[in-house]
Length: 174
Image 1 (cartoon, rainbow, N blue to C red):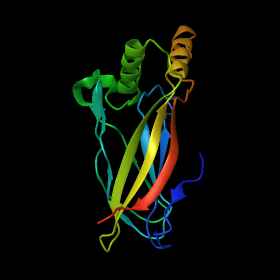
Image 2: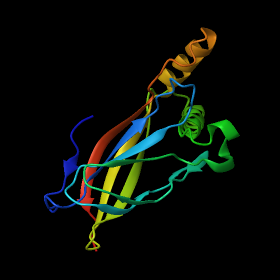
Image 3: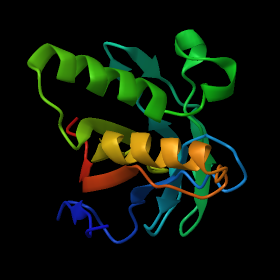
């Protein structure tokens, strides 16, 4: 992961939420866990991962009340009834459908599918800050790895098909 771009308007005390994805399916679980890490000097309040809205479905996230400095919290996406019951916290499912639909429309097969996402939060003094990032899905790797694991009984072998790129942390204009 490249170092996030931080606005010079941030102070040393301001919280800074970095986002990571944990898609370790070694236990057979298919969830995509978002890890929110506060690398700043103070508590981040009302940490909100904004919903991912796609034509093929949406994913919402629970609001995290607070994340202390140098701590993290984990949140799972909720795809609701967009997918089967055992895939409701696997964001790759709607991203795969969206990528497939885009490819059918254009007649091309792209190796990556990316969407901009945003996390908002406030300081104790109500200063609003946002972290934006690109959620990058690697659909070909997902399909090949998933099929390989199922064919060879290797269901617990992890395969990583999501990346976080282009993180920017800035105060929100008021």
